[in-house]
Length: 263
Image (cartoon, rainbow, N blue to C red):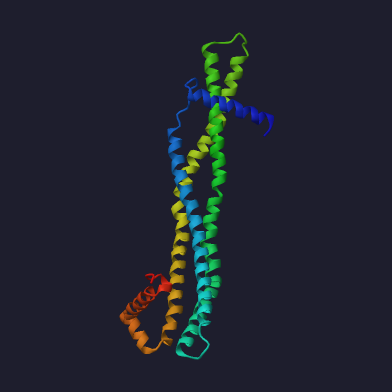
């Protein structure tokens, strides 16, 4: 920070202190605060959306990769040519293909239609925030110079040059502040209003991606069922397998090695 910038920071800190103690008039800023509040809500939700969208892509990648590892592990249980071994091998191929298709068919389109547009939108927030912060600093300058001018106008100094100089400083500070204020009062509502038309396509593609992933997963895993013996497929369709699985789990719970009652 330059010496001039340091002096301005000190002066602004003094202005804020005097305003808090009621020694210096503070400009009413209600309209701007309302617009800034709307913008802050938009910024918060857009930033959270970007974070969640990234996490979703990471999650489905991880899930697909985990399924592939599960398939490889299950196949390792069998070393014969039984029906169960065939099902395990088929399952492994299905989840490996799903993992490969996730990387090839989902990752790139999702980035292009969801992550990149939302990320680009969020990249503007730091620049907008800089302008808002600058406006705040210029408002402090404006209040300080206005107060200085009023005091000299009410009680003229022996130095006749002070009042014209204070008037000039006040008007310059007013012009700078009002220019920034005008810019933000126009652009902040425009930025907030554009959120729906801008984000709608990305949100639609996000849903389409989820549907596509779910459908492909269902189709890939559903294809494994035809390798099950007919009785098992019938039991699955009738919901009987759930009961059988629960029965086996109950028997396992009764074993001492699985946390059953101590002898």
